[in-house]
Length: 545
Image (cartoon, rainbow, N blue to C red; front, side):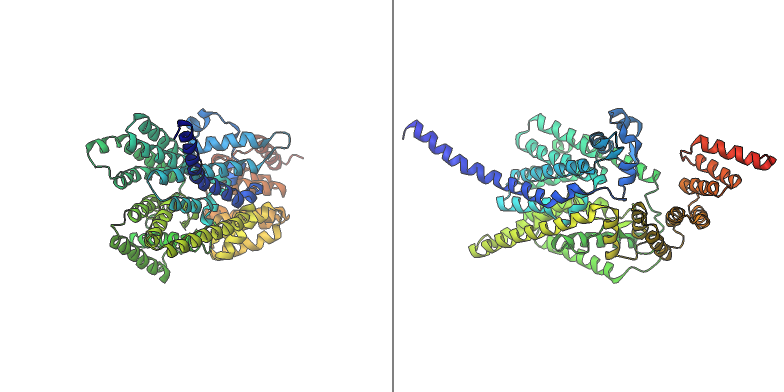
């Protein structure tokens, strides 16, 4: 055969190979775009978007100094790279003439980061020698699973998709390091790990995942393998301590006496079991899953979850010789362990956004086992291909519908209350969303329900006061602000708004101390307002006209 014919034959062989190699990733990107296309028209929601984006004056400054030196902690989180990326989006989305923000800029950026992460996940599993079908289904589920809608369609959850991108890029580079030993791969891993840590502190889980990759790659464990990871271990410890300090400063960490250790262990089992269950059947999806009331015995469901976790552990041990199962399960457990609420942070016993990276490991474990079981029989393998593809398409359809829930605050909290109308926080947030939409009378009824669930809920009293004020019911507003101050004396907004309401009713002598108290608590009270109150109070006391 001539050299010319040999070259032509080689090109004919390479072309189909390239098509097969890239057909999967292209299909995943197209499917993800179809799922999330509707979310690009969504607005903002009153669930961190207000504090992170809408009222955050720091985002008007997109300089590195602002977010990496001057204001590194926001809302109880240390994630300067995330805040800088939000500032860049803010700069692009801000309409100076209209003084408005284009939410689609934030949503588009989040979707692009999510699709890039999906491509990185595909490359990662391909590099580890996984079957093309396993890579495709695993990555497709990552891209379109309904539980991930919260991470992608929520504007202020930029930290999830941003840290996910750097996290997976670091794993890809580390795989290159294991293969080639070229120093560039290790340096890239280190730099990308730093970027992931500066995006979200839970990226510390990457260090034990690297040891897991060593085991899966049959890399012998020795001092060299350990020493090369010491810089990453040091960075993980530093980032973990920064995150804990930020959470404590924001008072996000709950009192450990509120739930004893045994009960927190139940919460961890419940969260773990629910994450596994929702992977297969994404039921009851919601923006908020509250803790059970403190002091009450846990429901039977929590004990059932603990038994289920023990059973799952036994199954993994039973099939421990299946290397892919152990790797995928280990990846899932390592990356989800930090958010299982053994240290209660925030008000939620579980959250869908916590599965963003962990579901990759779970999907890989499940799909690898399915392939192994069906590999010997052609009929079983064909059935598996059909069923898994159908499963992905069903998940995509559910996710597409789920994106509509994140359209605005009213839609989000209506959905959350439909799933659980016994969570005071969800009820309060729904009332705030109604207030923002100008539906003040409806908001009053919702705040009443929130206070029936939690009689000492200072935030609900404050928000109900706002609704009363907007309806011109000033005396009722003052009563609610007073109750808010009783239960949350550090709530500066309540002091300020009560001062404003007193002023509206012509009572400057009562308004002045409230305004001064709000100022002492850090509220940016207008100096001219205090000056007017002082003048009017003085005039009233001296009897001047």
